[in-house]
Amino acid sequence: MADLASAAGRRWHKPPLIKSPLLRWGLGLGVALYLAFAFGTTEVNWERVADGIPRGVRFISAFFPPDFVSRWDEIVDGIAESLWMTVISTVVGIALSVPIGLGAARNLAPRPVYYFCRGVLAVSRSFQEIIIAIFCVKLFGFGPFAGFVTLSFATIGFYGKLLAEDIEDMDPAQAEAVRATGAGWFQWLNYAVQPQVLPRMIGLGLYRLDINFRESAVVGIVGAGGIGATLTTAFDRYEFGSAAAILLIIIAIVMAVEYTSGYVRKWVQ
Amino acid sequence: MPVRDAGTARVWQRRERAQQLAIWACYLLAGMTFVLCWNLVSEKTIWAFVWDAHNQAGDLAARMVPPRWDYMEQLWWPIWDTLNIATLGTFMALVFAVPVAFFAARNTTPSRFLLRPIALFFIVSSRSINSLIWALMLVANLGPGVLAGIIAIGLRSIGFCAKLLYEAIEEIDEGQVEAIRATGASGPQVLAYGVLPQIMPAFAGITVFRWDINIRESTVLGLVGAGGIGLQLNASITNLAWTQVSLILLVIIATVVVSEWISAKIRHAII
Image 1 (cartoon, rainbow over the protein chains, first blue to last red):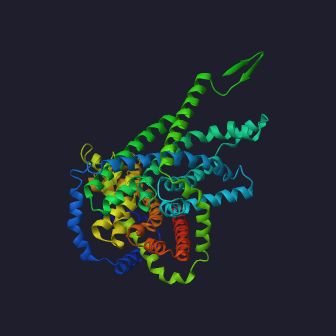
Image 2: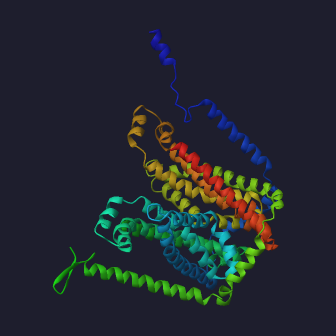
Image 3: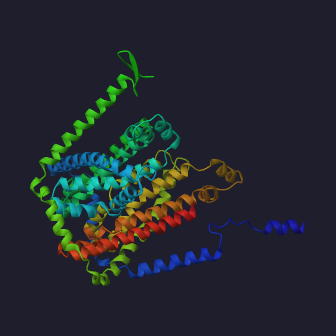
């Protein structure tokens, strides 16, 4: 009986997530040290923050109700520009990313082409859209053309990489079967590779359309056209009512695009 | 099998005629939309500037090399700020994302008709507004500085983390949860012992993934005044100090590559 009592007295403990106690405590200590150091060195002007609170309240109250009327024409213009930009940059970006994606697939391209294409993809992916947008505005002048180039370039990095990975993962047996019929290189591409990657790629294209619209709302901040320019102007003039209206419209459009693209993706796959 | 009669021979085709026509109609429609959009953008473009772009590019490239290496001394502090914005922003996002995710997941939400839609709306609005726009709003309200950047990154990441997390929660194995419940565990105990251990790997993966994205995003927040290396970038561009700009861009690439490497290593260790 004594055995049972002592056994019942022992409590079960959940096994820890990280097994090694040294690593566990070391990690905890490291995080604590980092947090202390980070908070210690972060300069926050609390007076300015306190000043900002009434303004923040005014901003939040501007959402009830948002002011759609006084800047309506500018808002419509900005949204339309964003939408045009989104469409053409997605189309052009995907069109350009197909050859680059083919070149970046290890099982398709010769080594030098492979490294070159991977390099292009890496450069396109490592910069934020907004930094590219700054340079495009510098080169092409203010307006939606700069935004179009920016978004197309960003699309190449995203789409090309995923296309290349999808081609690398394809079923080699099907490709070999088509090649065995004596198909030429383009026929091989068209009948062996394309049908295998197309359904997923259509889905990803729609997803990229979605991302491009979101980004098109941002590139306007540095002058590359679209609704972002209207939004920045509204903030600069402290017209919080109009800013709230623009934000709500952006959210509504993003939701609409996301739902339709999700629906189409389900239908395609 | 779709075949076409060509005189005496029968030729194989990939698709039936109706299907092929439908596909061509789709292409035509897409082409027309594209041309329409292109014309609208082209109307607002000053083409003289576009044709001049190669001169501008050459000029800019000439001004950007060589990078001004000694400017590096003034960059260490902004880099530290950038890292802090990304890391503390991720922390903040996680603190809020976990409850939101539990409210949003179909199998753990306390009320399906009230709290779940609210949580989902939170997630969508946080996700559809870019961190730069969040930063723009916060700088207008809280003033420029690192704090606005941290909150902006945090607000943007809540939706992202909560969405991935609630999808992970919905995919857990119900059998384990039921086993814990059968021992007579209370609601919080079921969450702690039945649900949490199952989503911990996903949680860690999401955290590192988002941290990596946040490093990228925090490099540009300074453009609207929210602290970090973007402030230096903006100042250098306005002063036309292109040799400094090229150095900053190199630093940004290096930071992004290092953070990507770290996050890949950690994710590899977890999964």
